Length: 190
Image 1: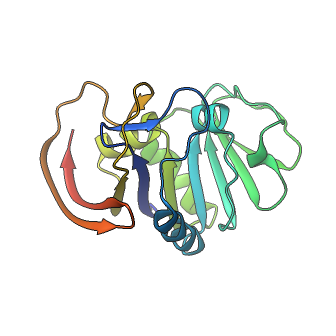
Image 2 (image 1 turned 120 degrees about the vertical axis):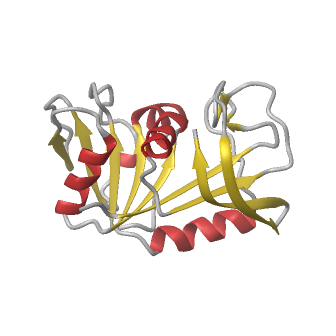
């Protein structure tokens, strides 16, 4: 069984989800409040190892944090490993980080990983990035809700949400939200 999966991401008008030069806020104030509410409504927030290494995010508001780190590249110095919530690393390798639970996986199939997440009691999961992780969910069509907050600014460099991809049959609604636009994606084929 799979958890209920919500994907949420903020991007610039030209499709970048990070600046490439470390942490750079893309979400506006209204969107940050919306994300805070979303985090409070789920059992876990999920990110990839690259997001941790580039952004060093502080993820508060959820009881659990999940990091996908296939090769276990991370070390203990990141803020996500503070003790404010239970943190799980899903990896192909066994390694120890204090106050972190390691779940060794046989492969990086996102469906199998999410089955393990469900078995750990996490029934609602918020996926926050980065692009490689989000694309795994989209390509596997494993999501129940998908939100993109579009900031009206442009980033000259950085990581695109959809790098060199053809997107077909996208169904969405859009609303003005704070200083940006909130897209609610109903279906998308990549």
